[in-house]
Image 1 (cartoon, helix red, strand yellow):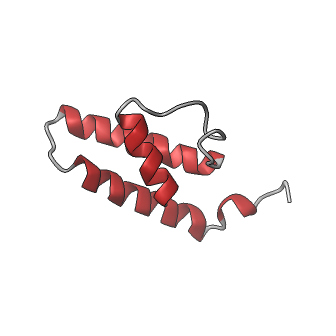
Image 2 (tube, rainbow, N blue to C red):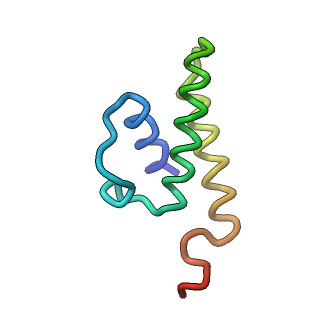
Length: 78
């Protein structure tokens, strides 16, 4: 979760770079990051003050759901 939280903040502030692999993330983690950043941008437009808190919660919830089902180690490519 910490990598998603870190890069979400960087991307939101325009400091993200490269693709998800250069950030050290899996495709699933990057999907979560995009959802977190989209929600943060919408909240920012609406004048929300606790953007970081929102991002923290969304990253935690997204990662919990992703890894609950096995995450990147599960699937037909094994």
